[in-house]
Image 1 (cartoon, rainbow, N blue to C red):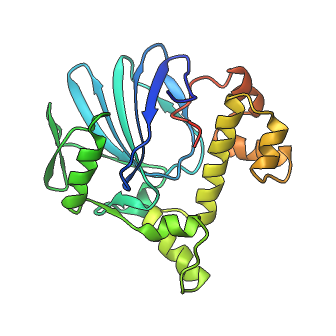
Image 2 (cartoon, rainbow, N blue to C red):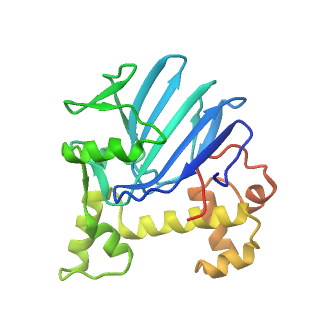
Image 3 (cartoon, rainbow, N blue to C red):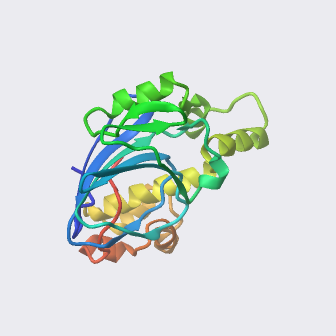
Length: 238
């Protein structure tokens, strides 16, 4: 279970052993009509069903917190792709802070760039992404995760940044800022002392942490701690 149970949506999430997937989550909306969508460096495949109608989309990286509408009585399934994993035929730069919906969706399948695929499913997410990878729809660049782990390829730093941005839509620095702030928010929600979080995650001081939370999570540390932040999108400890 994730650390973000809110007032209107409860999320389940799990890890994945697939190199293409960072996390799989699901949820159902109830008594909430909007939520704070927190920043994310990852691309996400999302399916949602209202009544009998399924819709499927891909969401690009989100560079800041935004308010997102939530349709009532709707089921959601999300497949958060690993960093460096993207959909081959999408204009990556134009989908940062945006998404693209697939319009050819039936009760059991979705057409993705000419390929018929099963709908996103919490238990079978790995099979869907494997099929998409075999079809060349999903691609993965391992250099992205290598760079984030500190590996320095035998090319200039400028070339690395350009390649990284071309693959992910973001710079390495932006990814690190987003991931660090998400980790801080999850720790604060779990009850960790704010001063310790700032120190342990390498913030200059608590005001530095506060500015990052405002930008990437949209709420103060106090609101995260006491529950007044309201409904957040999926947030969990890494």
